[in-house]
Length: 321
Image (tube, rainbow, N blue to C red; front, side, top):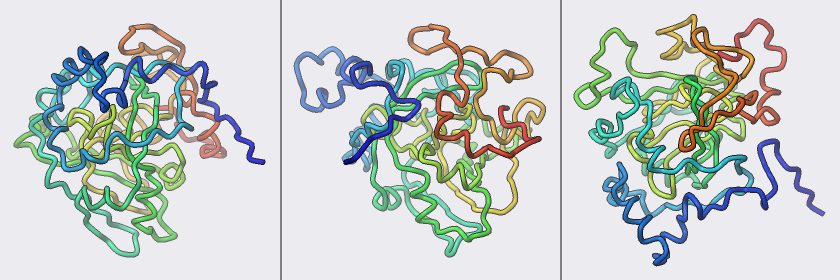
Protein backbone atom coordinates (compact mmCIF):
# COMPACT_ATOMS: atom_id res chain seq x y z
CA UNK A 1 0.00 0.00 0.00
CA UNK A 2 1.31 3.45 -0.93
CA UNK A 3 1.19 5.95 1.93
CA UNK A 4 1.63 9.61 0.93
CA UNK A 5 3.36 11.79 3.52
CA UNK A 6 2.10 15.34 3.30
CA UNK A 7 4.86 17.92 2.94
CA UNK A 8 5.17 20.89 5.27
CA UNK A 9 3.95 23.43 2.73
CA UNK A 10 0.93 21.36 1.70
CA UNK A 11 -2.64 21.86 2.85
CA UNK A 12 -5.68 19.61 2.40
CA UNK A 13 -7.09 19.76 -1.09
CA UNK A 14 -10.38 21.05 0.33
CA UNK A 15 -8.58 24.14 1.62
CA UNK A 16 -6.53 24.90 -1.47
CA UNK A 17 -7.48 28.04 -3.37
CA UNK A 18 -9.51 26.95 -6.39
CA UNK A 19 -7.41 27.26 -9.50
CA UNK A 20 -10.27 28.78 -11.43
CA UNK A 21 -10.37 31.90 -9.27
CA UNK A 22 -7.02 33.21 -10.45
CA UNK A 23 -5.87 31.13 -13.36
CA UNK A 24 -8.70 29.44 -15.28
CA UNK A 25 -5.96 28.32 -17.62
CA UNK A 26 -7.68 25.16 -18.75
CA UNK A 27 -10.99 26.97 -19.08
CA UNK A 28 -9.19 29.65 -21.08
CA UNK A 29 -7.88 27.04 -23.47
CA UNK A 30 -11.35 25.61 -23.98
CA UNK A 31 -12.65 29.11 -24.75
CA UNK A 32 -15.58 29.11 -22.33
CA UNK A 33 -17.84 32.11 -22.62
CA UNK A 34 -17.67 32.84 -18.89
CA UNK A 35 -14.05 33.87 -19.29
CA UNK A 36 -14.62 36.42 -22.04
CA UNK A 37 -13.74 39.41 -19.87
CA UNK A 38 -10.75 37.65 -18.35
CA UNK A 39 -9.41 36.75 -21.77
CA UNK A 40 -9.75 40.32 -22.99
CA UNK A 41 -7.80 41.55 -19.98
CA UNK A 42 -5.04 38.98 -20.22
CA UNK A 43 -4.57 39.67 -23.92
CA UNK A 44 -3.36 43.13 -22.98
CA UNK A 45 -0.87 41.95 -20.34
CA UNK A 46 2.84 42.63 -20.92
CA UNK A 47 4.46 39.77 -22.78
CA UNK A 48 1.24 38.51 -24.38
CA UNK A 49 2.36 39.26 -27.93
CA UNK A 50 5.69 37.60 -27.25
CA UNK A 51 4.03 34.51 -25.81
CA UNK A 52 1.91 34.02 -28.94
CA UNK A 53 4.97 33.81 -31.20
CA UNK A 54 7.35 32.02 -28.81
CA UNK A 55 8.55 28.78 -30.45
CA UNK A 56 8.04 26.95 -27.15
CA UNK A 57 4.41 28.06 -26.78
CA UNK A 58 3.11 24.60 -27.66
CA UNK A 59 4.67 23.22 -24.46
CA UNK A 60 2.24 25.15 -22.26
CA UNK A 61 0.27 24.85 -20.13
CA UNK A 62 2.46 22.24 -18.47
CA UNK A 63 0.87 19.58 -16.29
CA UNK A 64 0.43 20.66 -12.68
CA UNK A 65 2.56 18.80 -10.12
CA UNK A 66 0.04 18.44 -7.31
CA UNK A 67 2.79 17.89 -4.70
CA UNK A 68 3.35 21.66 -4.72
CA UNK A 69 0.36 23.59 -3.38
CA UNK A 70 -0.05 26.83 -1.47
CA UNK A 71 -1.46 28.21 1.75
CA UNK A 72 -2.41 31.44 0.00
CA UNK A 73 -4.01 32.57 -3.23
CA UNK A 74 -2.00 32.80 -6.44
CA UNK A 75 -1.05 36.41 -7.17
CA UNK A 76 -3.10 37.71 -10.11
CA UNK A 77 -1.03 37.85 -13.29
CA UNK A 78 -1.85 41.47 -14.01
CA UNK A 79 -0.23 42.44 -10.69
CA UNK A 80 2.68 40.03 -10.78
CA UNK A 81 3.63 40.95 -14.33
CA UNK A 82 3.78 44.69 -13.66
CA UNK A 83 5.64 44.76 -10.33
CA UNK A 84 9.09 43.36 -10.91
CA UNK A 85 12.73 43.63 -9.96
CA UNK A 86 15.05 43.29 -12.93
CA UNK A 87 18.06 45.51 -12.28
CA UNK A 88 19.43 45.03 -15.77
CA UNK A 89 16.60 47.33 -16.87
CA UNK A 90 16.51 49.70 -13.89
CA UNK A 91 15.92 49.86 -10.15
CA UNK A 92 12.22 50.79 -10.20
CA UNK A 93 9.43 48.20 -10.02
CA UNK A 94 7.72 49.11 -13.31
CA UNK A 95 10.49 47.83 -15.57
CA UNK A 96 8.20 45.49 -17.48
CA UNK A 97 7.93 47.84 -20.45
CA UNK A 98 11.71 48.17 -20.72
CA UNK A 99 12.23 44.42 -20.41
CA UNK A 100 10.29 43.84 -23.64
CA UNK A 101 13.42 45.00 -25.51
CA UNK A 102 15.28 41.82 -24.52
CA UNK A 103 15.69 39.42 -27.49
CA UNK A 104 15.14 35.83 -26.34
CA UNK A 105 15.74 34.00 -29.64
CA UNK A 106 18.33 32.91 -30.43
CA UNK A 107 19.30 32.15 -26.81
CA UNK A 108 22.18 29.89 -25.89
CA UNK A 109 23.02 28.35 -22.53
CA UNK A 110 26.64 27.50 -21.77
CA UNK A 111 27.48 24.65 -19.35
CA UNK A 112 31.13 24.56 -18.32
CA UNK A 113 33.64 24.23 -15.51
CA UNK A 114 34.04 20.94 -13.69
CA UNK A 115 31.97 18.80 -16.07
CA UNK A 116 32.77 15.74 -18.14
CA UNK A 117 32.14 17.69 -21.35
CA UNK A 118 31.46 21.40 -21.74
CA UNK A 119 28.52 22.21 -23.98
CA UNK A 120 26.40 25.00 -25.39
CA UNK A 121 22.70 24.37 -25.89
CA UNK A 122 20.06 26.52 -27.54
CA UNK A 123 17.16 27.13 -25.21
CA UNK A 124 14.78 25.11 -27.37
CA UNK A 125 17.30 22.28 -27.56
CA UNK A 126 17.47 22.30 -23.76
CA UNK A 127 13.68 22.26 -23.49
CA UNK A 128 13.59 19.20 -25.74
CA UNK A 129 15.76 17.31 -23.24
CA UNK A 130 13.57 17.85 -20.18
CA UNK A 131 9.97 17.37 -19.10
CA UNK A 132 8.10 20.50 -18.04
CA UNK A 133 5.70 20.71 -15.13
CA UNK A 134 3.86 23.44 -13.26
CA UNK A 135 4.49 24.16 -9.59
CA UNK A 136 2.81 26.63 -7.23
CA UNK A 137 5.52 28.43 -5.25
CA UNK A 138 5.71 31.23 -2.75
CA UNK A 139 8.19 33.99 -3.57
CA UNK A 140 9.64 36.21 -0.82
CA UNK A 141 11.59 39.34 -1.72
CA UNK A 142 14.27 40.64 0.63
CA UNK A 143 12.36 43.94 0.46
CA UNK A 144 9.64 42.26 2.59
CA UNK A 145 6.96 41.77 -0.05
CA UNK A 146 5.72 38.41 -1.27
CA UNK A 147 3.69 36.76 -3.99
CA UNK A 148 2.60 33.31 -5.10
CA UNK A 149 3.23 32.11 -8.64
CA UNK A 150 2.33 29.18 -10.92
CA UNK A 151 5.80 28.59 -12.38
CA UNK A 152 6.38 26.13 -15.21
CA UNK A 153 9.76 24.54 -15.82
CA UNK A 154 11.93 21.66 -14.70
CA UNK A 155 14.03 20.67 -11.72
CA UNK A 156 17.49 22.21 -11.57
CA UNK A 157 18.64 18.67 -10.75
CA UNK A 158 17.75 17.74 -14.35
CA UNK A 159 20.24 20.27 -15.67
CA UNK A 160 22.84 18.91 -13.24
CA UNK A 161 22.19 15.47 -14.69
CA UNK A 162 22.64 16.76 -18.24
CA UNK A 163 25.87 18.52 -17.25
CA UNK A 164 27.35 15.46 -15.52
CA UNK A 165 29.60 17.41 -13.11
CA UNK A 166 32.81 15.94 -11.75
CA UNK A 167 32.85 14.54 -8.23
CA UNK A 168 34.89 17.48 -6.92
CA UNK A 169 32.33 20.13 -7.93
CA UNK A 170 30.92 21.84 -4.82
CA UNK A 171 29.06 24.83 -6.28
CA UNK A 172 27.00 25.78 -9.29
CA UNK A 173 27.52 29.37 -10.46
CA UNK A 174 25.05 31.06 -12.81
CA UNK A 175 25.35 34.13 -15.01
CA UNK A 176 22.78 36.25 -16.79
CA UNK A 177 23.05 37.95 -20.18
CA UNK A 178 25.14 41.06 -20.82
CA UNK A 179 23.66 43.36 -23.44
CA UNK A 180 23.83 47.05 -22.43
CA UNK A 181 22.47 48.07 -25.82
CA UNK A 182 19.02 46.87 -24.72
CA UNK A 183 19.43 46.68 -20.92
CA UNK A 184 20.08 50.26 -19.80
CA UNK A 185 20.84 49.23 -16.23
CA UNK A 186 23.92 47.40 -17.48
CA UNK A 187 25.36 50.72 -18.61
CA UNK A 188 26.00 51.46 -14.92
CA UNK A 189 29.66 50.53 -15.04
CA UNK A 190 30.06 50.72 -11.27
CA UNK A 191 27.98 47.55 -10.87
CA UNK A 192 29.61 44.14 -11.40
CA UNK A 193 27.73 43.06 -14.54
CA UNK A 194 26.72 40.52 -15.61
CA UNK A 195 24.50 39.44 -12.72
CA UNK A 196 25.84 36.30 -11.07
CA UNK A 197 24.51 33.91 -8.45
CA UNK A 198 25.53 30.54 -7.04
CA UNK A 199 24.28 27.65 -4.93
CA UNK A 200 25.87 24.59 -3.40
CA UNK A 201 25.50 21.26 -5.14
CA UNK A 202 23.21 20.12 -2.34
CA UNK A 203 20.96 23.12 -3.01
CA UNK A 204 21.13 22.64 -6.77
CA UNK A 205 19.87 19.08 -6.45
CA UNK A 206 17.23 19.75 -3.80
CA UNK A 207 13.71 18.88 -4.98
CA UNK A 208 12.56 22.48 -4.65
CA UNK A 209 15.26 24.08 -6.84
CA UNK A 210 13.45 24.83 -10.10
CA UNK A 211 14.48 26.24 -13.47
CA UNK A 212 11.58 28.32 -14.74
CA UNK A 213 10.61 28.61 -18.41
CA UNK A 214 6.97 29.62 -18.10
CA UNK A 215 4.34 31.15 -15.84
CA UNK A 216 0.56 31.36 -15.78
CA UNK A 217 0.26 28.58 -18.32
CA UNK A 218 2.41 30.11 -21.08
CA UNK A 219 6.05 30.87 -21.89
CA UNK A 220 7.84 33.10 -19.43
CA UNK A 221 7.28 36.83 -19.91
CA UNK A 222 10.46 38.84 -20.37
CA UNK A 223 10.04 40.80 -17.13
CA UNK A 224 10.02 37.49 -15.24
CA UNK A 225 13.44 36.58 -16.63
CA UNK A 226 12.74 34.87 -19.94
CA UNK A 227 13.59 32.49 -21.33
CA UNK A 228 15.23 30.77 -18.33
CA UNK A 229 15.35 31.80 -14.68
CA UNK A 230 15.77 30.14 -11.30
CA UNK A 231 13.24 29.73 -8.49
CA UNK A 232 14.51 28.96 -4.98
CA UNK A 233 11.38 29.46 -2.87
CA UNK A 234 13.09 29.12 0.52
CA UNK A 235 15.54 31.95 -0.23
CA UNK A 236 15.12 35.67 -0.77
CA UNK A 237 14.22 36.52 -4.33
CA UNK A 238 17.55 38.02 -5.39
CA UNK A 239 19.00 34.50 -5.35
CA UNK A 240 16.58 33.51 -8.14
CA UNK A 241 18.67 34.79 -11.04
CA UNK A 242 16.90 35.78 -14.27
CA UNK A 243 17.64 35.26 -17.98
CA UNK A 244 20.43 32.74 -17.44
CA UNK A 245 23.06 32.14 -20.13
CA UNK A 246 25.71 30.22 -18.23
CA UNK A 247 26.06 27.45 -15.63
CA UNK A 248 29.55 26.81 -14.23
CA UNK A 249 30.43 23.96 -11.89
CA UNK A 250 33.29 24.77 -9.54
CA UNK A 251 35.01 23.78 -6.31
CA UNK A 252 35.47 27.41 -5.20
CA UNK A 253 32.57 29.31 -3.66
CA UNK A 254 31.64 32.16 -6.04
CA UNK A 255 30.80 35.66 -4.89
CA UNK A 256 27.41 36.77 -6.14
CA UNK A 257 26.29 40.12 -7.58
CA UNK A 258 24.76 41.44 -4.35
CA UNK A 259 27.60 40.16 -2.19
CA UNK A 260 29.96 42.28 -4.27
CA UNK A 261 27.75 45.36 -4.04
CA UNK A 262 26.76 45.17 -0.36
CA UNK A 263 28.65 42.50 1.58
CA UNK A 264 27.39 43.90 4.90
CA UNK A 265 23.75 43.48 3.79
CA UNK A 266 23.68 40.50 1.43
CA UNK A 267 25.35 37.14 1.77
CA UNK A 268 25.83 33.90 -0.10
CA UNK A 269 23.04 31.94 1.60
CA UNK A 270 20.10 34.39 1.84
CA UNK A 271 17.68 31.93 3.44
CA UNK A 272 14.44 33.49 4.70
CA UNK A 273 14.28 33.99 8.47
CA UNK A 274 11.82 36.29 10.29
CA UNK A 275 14.18 36.58 13.27
CA UNK A 276 17.16 37.89 11.30
CA UNK A 277 16.51 41.46 10.14
CA UNK A 278 18.07 43.12 7.17
CA UNK A 279 20.45 45.81 8.47
CA UNK A 280 17.92 48.46 7.37
CA UNK A 281 14.51 46.83 7.98
CA UNK A 282 12.74 43.97 9.72
CA UNK A 283 12.01 40.63 8.09
CA UNK A 284 9.41 39.60 10.67
CA UNK A 285 6.48 40.18 8.31
CA UNK A 286 5.74 40.52 4.60
CA UNK A 287 3.25 42.37 2.41
CA UNK A 288 1.28 40.16 0.03
CA UNK A 289 1.01 41.59 -3.47
CA UNK A 290 -2.57 41.79 -4.65
CA UNK A 291 -4.15 42.11 -1.23
CA UNK A 292 -1.62 44.30 0.63
CA UNK A 293 -2.26 42.06 3.61
CA UNK A 294 0.64 41.88 6.08
CA UNK A 295 1.38 38.37 7.36
CA UNK A 296 4.12 36.86 9.53
CA UNK A 297 7.21 35.64 7.69
CA UNK A 298 7.94 31.93 7.99
CA UNK A 299 11.37 30.39 8.52
CA UNK A 300 12.73 29.24 5.14
CA UNK A 301 9.56 30.83 3.71
CA UNK A 302 7.61 27.82 4.98
CA UNK A 303 9.80 25.21 3.26
CA UNK A 304 11.95 24.30 6.26
CA UNK A 305 10.95 20.65 6.31
CA UNK A 306 12.44 20.21 2.85
CA UNK A 307 15.60 22.32 3.16
CA UNK A 308 16.69 22.83 6.77
CA UNK A 309 18.79 19.67 6.79
CA UNK A 310 21.15 21.11 4.17
CA UNK A 311 22.38 23.69 6.67
CA UNK A 312 23.01 21.49 9.69
CA UNK A 313 26.53 21.90 11.06
CA UNK A 314 27.29 25.12 9.19
CA UNK A 315 28.22 26.95 12.36
CA UNK A 316 29.61 30.42 11.80
CA UNK A 317 27.91 30.87 8.42
CA UNK A 318 25.47 33.77 7.97
CA UNK A 319 22.70 31.56 6.66
CA UNK A 320 19.88 34.09 6.70
CA UNK A 321 21.13 37.19 4.90
